[in-house]
Image 1: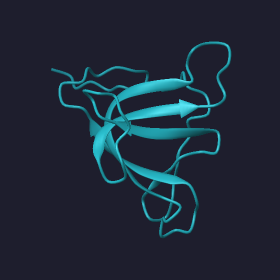
Image 2 (image 1 turned 120 degrees about the vertical axis):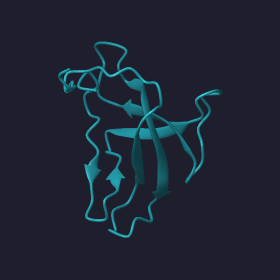
Image 3 (image 1 turned 135 degrees about the vertical axis):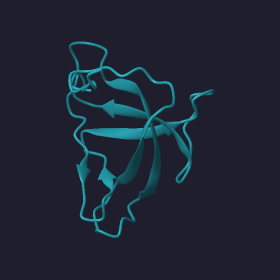
Length: 103
């Protein structure tokens, strides 16, 4: 997701990813695209406040994840924290950091 400036989510000592103050993360239902609540697994949608020269401020990923909580991470950091479980089943492998196994 190199094309979305500002989407750097830091991992805390508890192993949770924390949304940046320059963006947000939502987990949405893959059928309705409606946001899911805390603890519900769905597709990760990344939101950045920074891109202004192109429509890259919201990216729907093919990653499954869940919001773990807001303002109550055991590490003490405030804000939304989440977990990415991995790629959605059947998702195409692509991107600048892909690696392929030789056959």
